[in-house]
Length: 45
Image 1 (tube, rainbow, N blue to C red):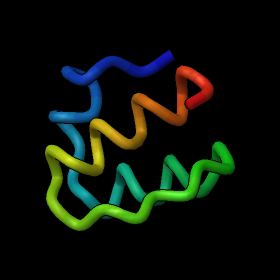
Image 2 (cartoon, helix red, strand yellow):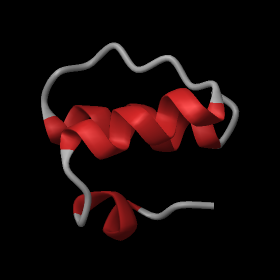
Image 3 (cartoon, one colour):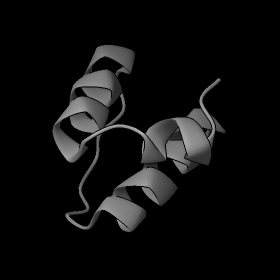
Image 4 (spheres, rainbow, N blue to C red):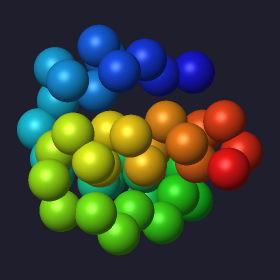
């Protein structure tokens, strides 16, 4: 499980790569929105 703090320390590209590896579809463009979407996917939303 990744936290918002973990993701804040990453670049957008790193977050997108991690999301793709985990099978999460990320559609947002702003970092804060990407993190929110990532965390939502992680929780099963």
